[in-house]
Each structure stands twice: as C-alpha cells, then as structure tokens.
Picture: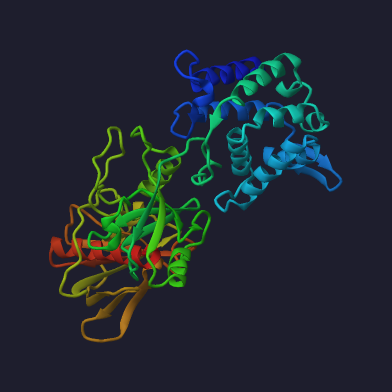
Length: 452
C-alpha cells in the first residue's frame, strides 16, 4: 500500500495539472469537461484518498457486511445540516440512482463524485464527512481523512476545486465502473429494418460490434467493428442478456432507430482499454475475428484480417464468401472422432488426424448449410445422418497440408455448456470448396447467435 504522503502528493500534482493557470485564464470563467486529459487522474487520486484505510468490511446487526463509497455517501445524507447542501446532496443521489447505465456500487460512487464536482459541492461534502461520526465508523485512525496534516492539505485543494466550474454529465458513464476515462460516444440514426446488418458479440456484459454487412443500413453510419452498442431506443444495453437487442427492436417496429455507440478509440487515437481487452478476448477465444476496419488502423493496433475464420495451428485462415447459387454441396464424410471435453479450435488438427489414422469407409454425402442448421445426408438417401444447430458447433478449420480436408467440432448440446464433443471430418473435391464451406459454417454460426 502506498504511503499516505505519496497519495496526497499525487493528488496535489494532478490538481496542478488539471486547474487552469491563473496567469493565463480566470479560474472563474474556466470550465473543466471530460475533454480535459488530466481529469481522470485527478478523480482517480481523489478516489484513492477516499479509499485509503476505508473499512470495507464492517460489523452490523446482521453480521459482517461489505461496504463501498457509494453506500457511505447514501448514509452521509442525514448528516448534511446545511439546508442548501442537503437539498442539492439529495438531488445528486437521486440522479445517480435513476441512471440506468450505472449497475455497480463503484460506478455509482464515481458518478456521485463527478456530479459533486459539477455542483461545486465536493469540498462541503468531504467537510461534512470528516466532521461527522461516519469518519470514525468508516475509516481507520491511520486514514488520510483522520490525519490532521493530510486532511488540511486535501481540504485546501478541494476548496480551490470548488471555485472552478466542472461540467461532467451522466450521459456517457457506462464504463465508469471500469475506468475513470470517459470514451467517445456518438448517437447514430438509421431507418428501421428487420435486419440492420450488425453482428454483435456479448463479452463481459457489453454488446460489441464484430461485423457490419456492407449492404446494410448500419454500413452508412459511424458504427465500426469494435464499437460498443451502449443504448438503443434509449434503453441501456449494459448487462443485458443475449437477444435483448432484437426484443427491443420488435417493440419499436417501423420507427427510426437511434443507437448510442461507444467508440473503441479515444480522441487521442489510443485504444480505450476496457473495450480493447474485450476485443483481445474475441481474438483469442472465439471462432470469429473483427472484420477489416473502415478507418485507417492506428500504429500498435492488434493486426486484423478481412475474414472471420478461427485461428488454428496449421489451418488456413483465408476467408471465402458463401456461394451465390445455393448451400448444397457434395462431399465425402470420412468419419468422426470423440474429443471428450476438447471442443476448442486448437484440437481440430488432432481430430482430423485421428479420423485419418482409423481409415473408416468413406461415405458420399450432401452437406446442407441453412439459416439455423448444418445437415449431412447420404447421397443415396434423403434421411440425415448428422444434424447440428450452429450453436452446437464450437470450432472448424482445415489442414494446409491436406487442402481438401476440413472438419468441425460439435457438442452434444450448446457448445458453451457441452462437455462431450465430436470432431466430424470431410473431404471436398477442391481446396476452394473446402474454404467456401468453412466460411459458410462460420457465417451461419455467427448469424444465428448475434445478428441484429
């Protein structure tokens, strides 16, 4: 744990960078907004002071409970003796409570701090706290708020901050529980369509755009792969279940569609870390990769490909569009291999080799890839021998040194919960056909799960 003197010194340094110079600009006329690059560090340092020796675990009549700053702020309202402070304090609390984008205590506590700065009340609020019984209830004796030396320095800085105007609204606080940095957000409008052309992946409670149909309504907006869908029709998409977006769209049928997006890059061109970490998760674990950007890539950005193929050892990654003349193809079914719990893309090669080594009799089949299922039928009979929904298929790929061979691994139920996987191996009469079928498998899987 950092020494309290170091924390307070960092807070003072962050204020000196944040506050306008009185030599160049009248402090009373300056307005600090989220465009100020020094604001996140100032807020972060203040939060560190508030959390230093904070009694997160406290004994109550119901046993040991865990508390965060937001809960302390709620309790502090009864200690606001000043009528002016009390009225505005309660207004701040109600604004935070009503914000649907704030789902965690940490996010609400941070939003409370932002609104307190905007109202110019942070000094009075902290002053009320340090003179109330809550300071001994929530803070250890060694805390900064109980140290006369450090407390005086803190209050002097907050007094100066109360003389500066802040404008920090709650319109773009969806990531406040993860970062003090406020990303770029944009409102886009498009005409209603049953398919607006977005492929969305839900990662850690966020709806991330992974692909945009080039002929769709969404392709004419500022939405890019890697952006986060924050709101649609004014409804927050943070922590919603898969399928919620389509449910919302049905309720507003035939209306112009307003979508609030959060960009994956900050105004300085650097990636926004909370989104970047989710994109890395898609790169590493999913069967799709982010489609090629419309905008110019930024240096040090993770390399991207045009396609949506899984990354496999010794597996070709070249994307090929699905054929325009149908989704029925004649191939050879070489057999299957039980993979146990191994459904990941890394085991495609192992599954193919296992089937080759067993030398099972080849079966001439027709593979049919429709909107919801992959169906395999014998050429001589119409009855299916294999049928999988795309949600059961966990990975697919082909060997570069055996170009005509391709395979997919499927679970006995939805692949995210299945514990029994089987690798099915096929042989196409050309490398091009193998690529095409793999591309359509991935496209089908993606459309079934995440299309909007």
